[in-house]
Length: 136
Figure (cartoon, rainbow, N blue to C red):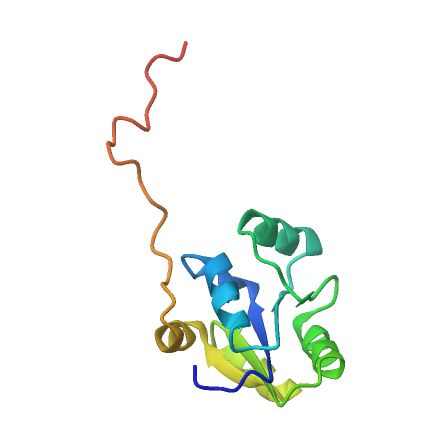
């Protein structure tokens, strides 16, 4: 990403979940963004659980509001030159356009920033190891 540091960066929760290391992504993004956070239609506890589990320190999150209302609120609160929304599809892109944010697909963002996308859940090295036959 070549933008300046006067930027607010919002990740849609689904986009953040596609990244292998959300904590590393946030740490990296803080180097060239003023504010970094998460927006989602999911209940607050879902976002909070994910960010805690992944040690993501966010400057803002959507709370009980929808994504459009959240992005509007964040844009009013954080007066930066750019507001960039990292999402996963056409709906997120349309939303960004509707609320006056730049849109960046998570795959494009990952490629530009050198972030690793998550793969399928890791399987046990030994397929027999995952099955316990010593249980009653």
